[in-house]
Image (tube, rainbow, N blue to C red; front, side):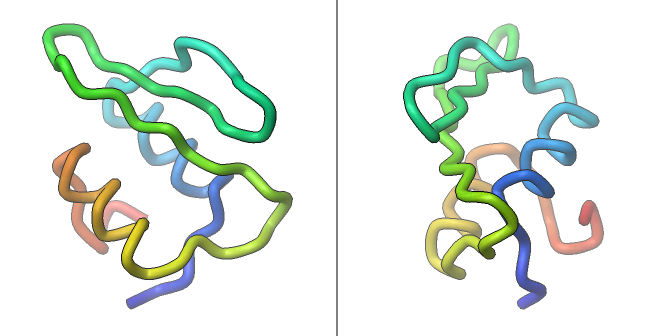
Amino acid sequence: MKQVSGKDLIRTLERNGWRLMRIQGSHHIYGKVGEPLRISVPVHGSHPLKPGILKHFMKIAGLDESDF
């Protein structure tokens, strides 16, 4: 799996209709109209997200590796 930072994930989410709802510390909380779930993306500079949390976010957002 490709290494993706929080910033990269945010760009991909925004391209796919997710919108920033609020920022709490270093976590950016995203939501989508008609979607009850929220995604809390940790943004720690350009540090890559761990594979497990990245897969979880991709599943919630309906993304695959080709979206990055």
